[in-house]
Image (tube, rainbow, N blue to C red; front, side, top):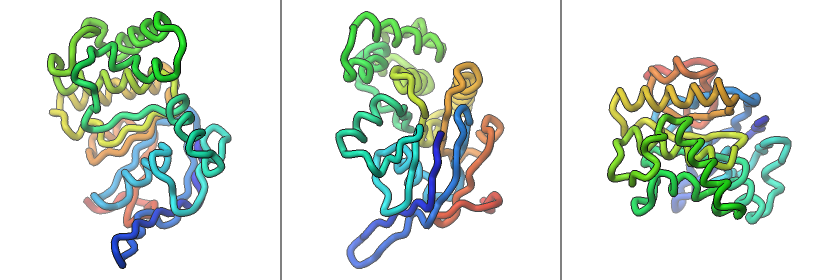
Length: 226
């Protein structure tokens, strides 16, 4: 499903080179729910950006669905992101002028196709995340937890192979956080959805199949002291 080999990422800041990833290797099987955890600055979000093809590594290899991603052109990478990957961010990233269902079907509309089909698919995704009664509500009319579940529904609209979530509960209270994590677990179990999530929250580990612990840009064999 996902195979990462000796992944490195350097950032040049003037005369200083920051080694954000220092040779990371691991695999994720189809249908796994995997967490990436560690201290701030350990390389968690940097790793997620490489896996999600949002950024390009300095060196190393990422194979997604048997596709060596380093061989893709920029146009092919964009198409791959749109059609095979789903993303959820901590700031929700909803368009305030659009309703919930319009926000959800936007990525499907970008692929082209029949309006009725992607409208029905968006309605189904909102039902799956428990928002069937909020189709025509705009983001300002929704709670933070509801907005994040709209973002989850949007990430599912193109039936992604992998769902990536970067600190998806960071801006939520404890009740909304639990609801969002329950939603992820339900998607993982009922749809066999592969999910990779970056989180700071220790209690989130109860939802995960396993945790990849990051420390100083490397994978750690044991949980770092928090």
